[in-house]
Image (cartoon, rainbow, N blue to C red; front, side, top):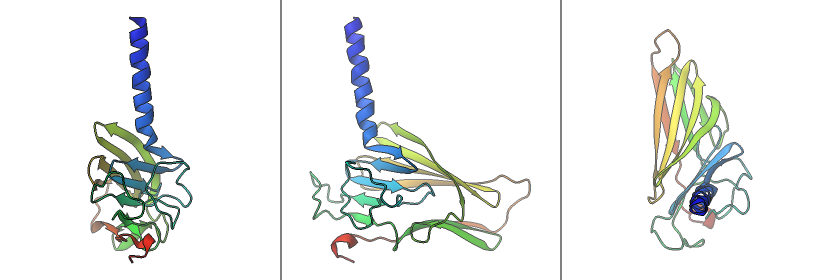
Length: 195
């Protein structure tokens, strides 16, 4: 019976270890890795990890160019991914870019993979979670007394991801004219000359 319990605990530990190898917070970046998509999230909250942050031999289908991971998708679900022909460098970090920002009382600030930041103070990435076939990570920040919370959620069997965003006024005074935006510049296969 003790041997059975030991074997079950070992199997569980190995399963959890190998699952976490493909999605994790490494340094200040998070890598959410699925069967047909891969997302790199910077500590400032946008898609596009820090330069040189893809650790070797990290299992990614990234084809080079910027040494940063933003969003890759194996849209035709080919098995295995073809590193030359898959249609899926959806977002490349840098310029063009991914960004988000907000306007409070007429002042606009942003965090951007191309122009840097943070205009919105970053509290970093946290709460990396695996729940069934879903993986998620939280990002938190603040600007002008407004907390910004984003949760990146990936269903590892899909080719897209979701972002849940909430804004919370932490001051006693009401805020007016508050706007939030998230933008991405699609760069399908730009790294192989598609533009």
